[in-house]
Structure formats: C-alpha cells, structure tokens
Image (cartoon, rainbow, N blue to C red):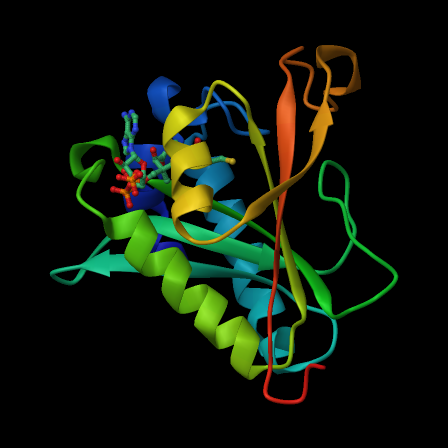
Length: 173
Ligand SMILES: CC(C)(COP(=O)(O)OP(=O)(O)OC[C@H]1O[C@@H](n2cnc3c(N)ncnc32)[C@H](O)[C@@H]1OP(=O)(O)O)[C@@H](O)C(=O)NCCC(=O)NCCS
C-alpha cells in the first residue's frame, strides 16, 4: 500500500462500524497517510526475520481492505521472542462484508506465511466480533486463550479470544 491509498483506507478504517472492535479510533486522512508512510518504510523488511507489514485487499483495482501481519512487538501489538510466531489483523470496507473477501485475503496471507517458514499465527479478537470469530474458525484457527474485560489493553473493556493456528510444514514431525 502507498500513501495514494490513504483515502481508500479512511473509507473503511475511518468508519465507526469498522473500528468498533479495532485497537484504534476512526482514522482521519492525515492519520491514514502517516500509517501508510510507516507501512512503506517497513515493507523492505518483509523478507527478513522480523517484519511488520500491511497488505492491501484489492478488488477491481480498488483497495477495499487490508491484512496486517507482524512479529515485532509494539504498543497494543503483542509479539513473541520467537520470530516464527506472528500476529495478524484485518479490516474490510463494510460495503464488501459478507462476500468472502476476508476469507480469501487471510487464506492467502496464511499461505504466504507458511511458505516463509512461519510456524504459528496468532489473532486476537473480541468475543462479540462474530464475523471475525467465524472467519478465524473457518480458517482453522483454534481458541487458545480467553481474556476478560479487565485485561483489555485497548480500553474497550470487552472480553476477547486469543486464536492460534499452527502451521504444518513438510519438515514438521
Ligand atoms: C471481520 C471482517 C474482516 C470479515 O470480513 P468479510 O469479508 O465480511 O468476511 P467473509 O465474508 O470472508 O466472512 C467470514 C465469516 O464471517 C461471517 N460474517 C461476515 N459478516 C458477518 C456479520 N456481519 N455477522 C455475522 N457473521 C458474519 C461469514 O458468514 C463468514 O463465516 P462462515 O465462513 O462461517 O460463513 C469484517 O467484518 C471487518 O472488516 N470487520 C471490521 C474490522 C474488524 O473487526 N477486524 C477484526 C479485528 S480482530
């Protein structure tokens, strides 16, 4: 993604319905531009052991969402000492919800991570975020932990689930 996609990103990450269960409030154009500048700087590290990348979900040449993958720890972004463990997050424009785009996009990202040798993928989601829970279950993620409202680092005071998917490779025993 580039800063030219900022307005497209605001169209969904600026939408109260979309950010309801995200760690940030609705983005302004300025904030989205800054986010994308940051994503651009980080992109060259995508082939390195530690990375933090944002991938566009594109439909008919238009950005309709993104998938964020990282194994570097930052505020509100957990990480492991083991670079083989990554976390992911995602958002799709509401106009395109329920049409399988997140399923397709996240599946492709999981396949890319498998090919790069990643062995475990984590995704945390609020219990009441039904679409996200169903998405992760559909993609073979297993519930690994439940966090109470008091443990919510984003300040929404909602219970959440830590999902996990272990990646089997040809060399896995
Ligand atoms: C979560 C999100 C990315 C799903 O995107 P999507 O493209 O609509 O997802 P898909 O069409 O691939 O559907 C995934 C699953 O969610 C279900 N689903 C989609 N929208 C739903 C809704 N509004 N209510 C209930 N289930 C829903 C689908 O039926 C599907 O489940 P199934 O495989 O059991 O049939 C999207 O709702 C979104 O952007 N939400 C806001 C951002 C967000 O909360 N991100 C997750 C943070 S952890």
